[in-house]
Length: 218
Image (cartoon, rainbow, N blue to C red; front, top):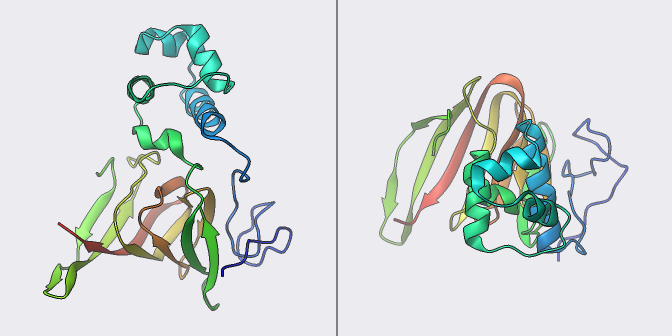
């Protein structure tokens, strides 16, 4: 069984509050779905310099409804979530970041051994395929060189079957997986369960290049 991260013993990341695995959990297990959605909605709306009235005008929802969603005093339908995501110009999955906490990830700082923790498109990203090897015994293996620059969006989160391996080559970023965040620098690697929502959250030093290896089930 994998142990829960400890706080206050950071060895890789420099962020305050980071645990010894380099992963910072955003929410405890007591956080419910409505609260997580409300927090994400407020974060993205604030980042876009929008008031609740601005977002209401873009989505056709009332300002009071948006306020109730952000304060977690009401539940909303998938249609409402899609309207909010469209109004903020983000994928709807971004509003669920931090909900899925039952996924596995293995974070390996440069020069260290692997540390395992439990965790719950393009958009300006440049993807260079390094091959596509299909096996009769299972899904294809697909390595990709990903480059992020000034035009890259941070918001997209991805989900797919099977594991994914990331190896940082250049730059510095915060990468999210489920409820956890990882500070990745050159030489760091991250092995994740692809079914947990994942993707770059903050681009700290550009350009960023990393190798991503996943399985193609199509």
